[in-house]
Image (cartoon, rainbow, N blue to C red; front, side, top):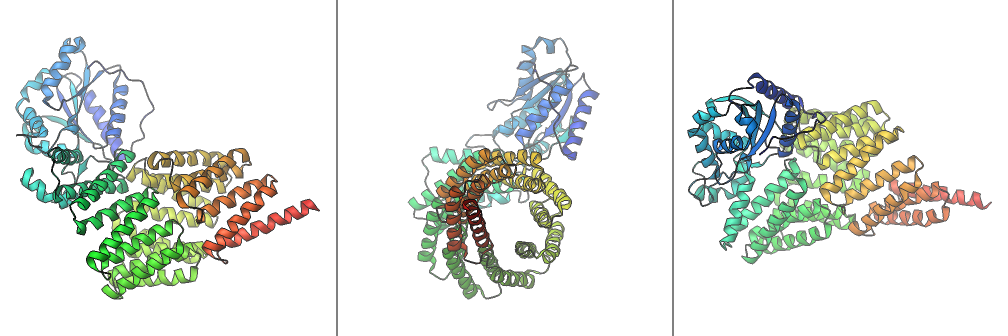
Length: 633
């Protein structure tokens, strides 16, 4: 490969740990510009790796020429790759000052996959036995490896390892490896065919691509058995968990892979009549569809899983209660509150009967039912259930448990909705401290607590305190989950709305646009969260009097909500109300009135006469009609 030409660019915004590693790498390169220097860079985040390489290549010029080499899969010999590069480049043969970056190691398979040796074993063999030959290449050589490769390199190429001039670790939440715990369901197969020893504590046991290749081999051999179904289900769940934990290299691509493998697991288990495991596959796939806003498909699968469990296990079984709860949660998202309540109550009664009144699953049912009542504005009923769930969790799990923190948080947010701010604040602070104590300061649940406390302060008009916490939550989510995660979009949206409340419109708009684009990238164009972003951006424009920009966004949000959620949903009522407000602000009273009426009737039907949003709709319509009367007079 020829010398890499790079264009100077803006410096990367690295966290302190990664910046230290980067600075140390630059120092090591410059300390020995002529002479072999083996520098091992470690990182699983391939996008971050490419950005770091681009930055040091730009920074080192013009003192160094920079080259890149990608090791081939078949014969991954570092010495051979360097030899071919030098043969092609006159500058290198003349002893020019250069830095060579080596990648491609991350694509090598750890598993043998039917071969005598795995690609990684071949690579380590070359490293171990060709160390002396590397003296012919008097350059800083930066070898990029993953954490999984590093662990095995130390064991299998100790001579090469002893020659290293430095190791530079670049940390990221993103990974390309699978942990020991994650492959526990398929451990039997890997022990039989691939792994003689199994490290129970390894967070980087093997690359996820190896599992894909192993499955592909079995498919090509025409294998259709329960083991393959277990492989499909395990890999689908691994991808689903990676999305939730912010570990995915490419969110959209891995979301599609999670769907593909869970679909294959369900289909094969159906073909093989593996009904016991089929219900779990259907539920897992349904939960994935639910997260994507594919509610109709999720409902079908949840219903199938429920009926299957009833038939196999009988009407009275904890798994049946779990299926009822899953379906109820979906119906709540769809605004089908009556159906949701009925199923939540069934699940709760079943759990009490099977598990006793004092069981963590009973506390979970109480919490879920309380959340439904809160959404309906039935605050008194919600409060009683939240308190009951909190006390039960304290009794069963102790004062210092994550479920107790969840209950404290939920009760606090109910109080916030009622304007009971003084009661809410100490509960949110307790939840925050408990999560910090149990999880450490750097955890997504800590970011959630910071966000909720900021939300409370914003409602109280304590904007300075709210802003600091919103920013802290945003930065923590970026650090833990990466720049491209749904929780980051939520933080961007929340910070923007705080700025909107303060009239800081120029600061709010770019954040709302970022949140919208991020959600589109992760969820596609058709998802309830896209409608929410469109609505929020429109309301910002309304606040600025930019009605022409706001109206088409509100119409988009309304149509999207109708399509995804159905005509009878609280979010549809919100869109009708907001669109009416736009027309009212422009003096288009006759266009606004039927929309306010629709919103009011929908809220009365879905939420009841006394819900705060119903009251707001009634007031909005009355105020509009007063204006219309004044105009006519």
